[in-house]
Length: 108
Image (tube, one colour):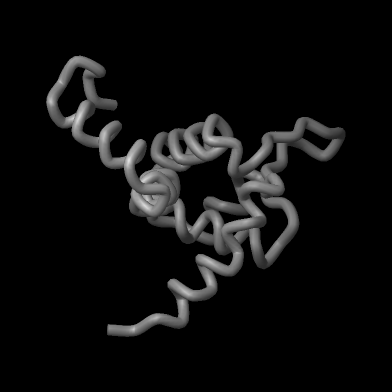
């Protein structure tokens, strides 16, 4: 996290206020976020351990951080049910499907 008083933070805020695409990219950027979102598009819900099996190279700390950020950004929800804790896409998260599909199809 950047300090809110830093020039870097202020520049980022200016960009996201000016351009919706920049704001969207900020929400989905991160080494693992796209993979996590794609996995939730393929399966309606996943547990923490499901994500770990799918992406064994991600650390527990990084996975927890990305899941929390995406929950805070209202892209996913965290549900506690009898079977355990599961993550699902929100309507906002589901609305990324076309964008993510286009990203997956695009090649340099």
